[in-house]
Length: 471
View 1: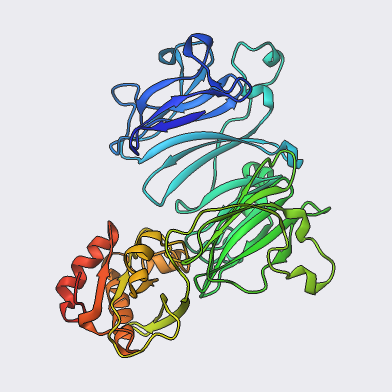
View 2 (view 1 turned 180 degrees about the vertical axis):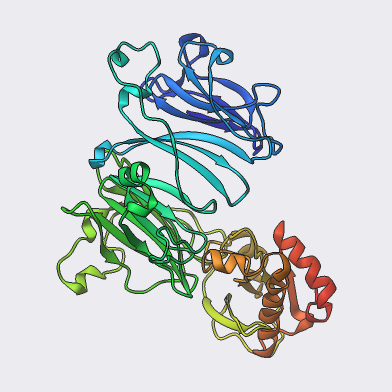
């Protein structure tokens, strides 16, 4: 299924592509096709879709996204597809998907969800047989017992779930005590629990395993799953490292590899064919390094001795391609510094500058910030700033202020509502630290932000115009 966006719009055209003929499947031949709308669709099985779209009155939420889910069988009219799930008009959206874990010796789980707000959701799940996902009149469904009813997943609204083998992975955004009087798990923790036990016996009857527990300066950014490995992306003081977990003989996930040191770079792992192997795409970039794509193999990280276990990037098989440099980065250095905010919190920031730069306040400096929606700023290739600013001798700075996601949900939540001022105070602290260290002075310091960062700029313009030569 391809969702094709016209000019980057949220609304998309839904089309089905045949990988064997390398062509789109026309609707007259049974291809799943819908006109432009804010559509959400996924396969239940080869010939059945779970789909939400603009089907007329009451089919959308107040946010303009699907409010209902239909089951659309190939060769039938979308108008005849029955509604199987619906949310409230006040929800952001609803959706449904299937997680087939049989290739990891797990089961098939069907999930429906309501996105209640930007950060909260309700999940409903059940374990099914493959036959339950087929069209109602499919001969393979004859004699098969009806699937169980969906069960509301008993987690907090701001938590999220996924599946790996027999396990349900639960990502926490706030403190959780699943068993009254039992262990409490902190915000930003990643847990895994036996899916069947959780769905049939309830959260109080389960044994929980900690996959990742954050510290004050570490958080996980996400993970990608190959057939036998879960590859976790971790930010350690806004620097990046990988952790590899493997399904072992006891069917538990065990840490088998961890980068010894976090680095100032951005990295991403994406599985190639998780049904068949542990190969993955590995991409990396930095402020001064364009994106590079590697072919990688997770099995190469399993070693017996400690020294080999921490060998950096030993999962790489082959370097495939690097994007051409867009600006001259020779002689540039990337450093990380910290500034003390008004309440004493240390705020990290990155500085890209010429090696051996004279610290007399004369260097034009561009300070960038965002600080919202749990979005993390950090090392990534900065082509436009490189061409327009760094090549001309300027300094480029990114501030990791509260409101972002650099240290997990708590870092974001620390600058919400009545505490929103903390985000602005953090940014001011970074600007003052740049000046105190004679990297620049107010007349040579410019600041920039877009979207949520644009609101930040408005506050800088009104709160501390004395700090900046340009906003």
